[in-house]
Structures are given as structure tokens and as C-alpha cells.
Length: 269
Image (cartoon, rainbow, N blue to C red):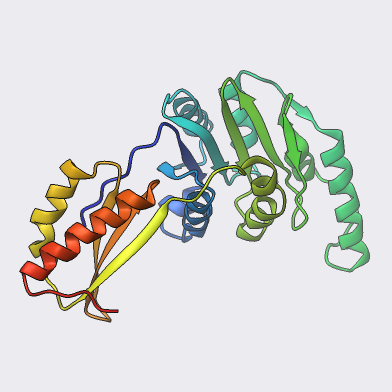
């Protein structure tokens, strides 16, 4: 059994992913995995990931809960920005923020231009703008930033809500990653260091034998997250250490090394 404990931070990030297809198991939620890694590397670790249905009250309720969490600094909301009636995220976010939805002219112009180009390339039957296209351009009023979506039609959005920021991103992985990598992270997520992460690997070691030393670390090094992860293919046990202070992480590693040596265990190189 893996034991995990998060190191303490004054603020963290929460992620809301939206879609019946995720909860039904039809679609693998690769966005959460990808964002979790990128946010960790940006020094903004995830505190919570919540998956909700395509229901207005479920989405708006979770957005309000995350924005009211005193330990949460940034809230990411992804999915449900498409052109069909089950895409309810924009309406739900507007409801959560107490704002009306408005037709955002720059987004509408961009959609019109993209649809025209797609028609000229023979990828769509008509250059006419549908009601579904207009849905993607109707956003909660007064965004603090609108991101360019170079791989799709739905814009990404950012709202400053008190001391917190709400980022609303499309659920299509290529679109989400493009917005995050090209514009969002460079502009809004700079200035922090990634946590220090180190590992020890023990060959054919039983996880349960490390319980005493890991329990000891909870008392002696509370700012270091320590987890154990058995690897079935390589028959290794990975002990992973993560924290803001390299000194504390290395101290925790040294303690585990010394304890393992008393048990006749040496980490593999």
C-alpha cells in the first residue's frame, strides 16, 4: 500500500474537469495528469482534482467551492466549452461568478474566420455560422484575459476573483496544452520554483518494512512529502521525497538510507 503525505504550502491549486464521458469511463482524463505535472513544475502543486458531470448546478457549485477555499490560489476548470447543448461550462461559470454571458466580439470574429478557412479547405460543408458556434463565443462578462486558441474555436479565459484566479480552458487535449504552454504558463505562472524531488530505489524490498522510518519522518521532517511506490515490472520499491527545501529533502533521504542499512538494504544506483 502506498503512503503519501503532501508537504505544506500556504497556497495551492485546484482543478475541475468536466464531462459525463470522464465519469462514465468512456474517456481517459489525460488533461488532469498533464496539468498536474506542469503545475508542479511551475511551483503551483495541485491540492485537489474534482471531476463533475455536465450539469450546470454541479459545475457552478464546484467552482464556487474551490474559489471560496482559503488554501486555494488558482482554480483551473477544463472541458465543456464546445458547441453542443451538453457543453455548459461557460453558462455555469457565469452563474458561479454572478455574471451574465455576453457575445465576445473578438472570439466571434475569430470563429467566423476559422470556419471560413475550414470551408475553403473543404473540411466543412458551409461557411455559415451556426448557433453552436455562437455558443462558444458567449462567455461570462468581464474576463480579465482571453487566451488565443490556435488549435480550435473555443477561447480560453481568466477571471480574477478577489485574490484568486479562475482559468477556464477547453477540454480537447491539444487545445488545452497549446493555450497552457504558449500563453498561460509564460504569462501567469512564472516566478516560482518547482519542488525538489529525489528518489531512492530498493530492489525486491517489501514496502511494509519501511513503515517505521516513514512514520518517523512525519514527525522529524513534516515539510517533506514521502511516498513509497512498488514497481511490479522492475521489482523495485521507489521511495520518493518532495519538498521546497533541498536541505530537508536530502536529510530525509539520508535518514532512510541509514535506516535501510540497518536492515541490510542498499539502494540501487
